Image 1 (cartoon, helix red, strand yellow):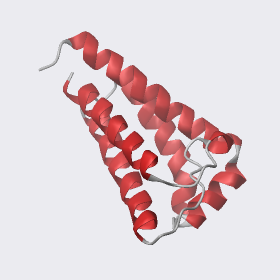
Image 2 (cartoon, helix red, strand yellow):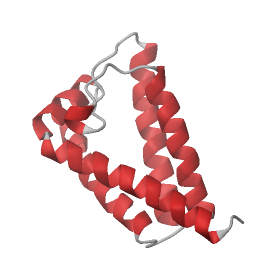
Image 3 (cartoon, rainbow, N blue to C red):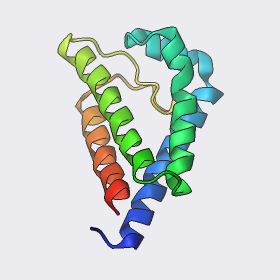
Length: 128
């Protein structure tokens, strides 16, 4: 078991990241939909992603439903990472769109590494 302050800090960090990512997608929704489509994500799923991010992020920040809300963040990040890896293994590098207009850079290894770091933070939030 981690010291409680570490879990709170980790939850706040990953929660803010998730809320910011969801809000960024909603503020540039057409760009997000195009990026998601380029990554092979169905339109109906891409429409849900920002809301899932906001709800999960807010839940983890507010420490609601822990540890399950933090484990759900881990699962979502794992899914995002699989989508990214699938594109990279196919040699396709569409724009990320992960943080709306601020992240139009082509997918690459740094996105996988970033998600791995986010997963570690999420696990700390779940067990803290």
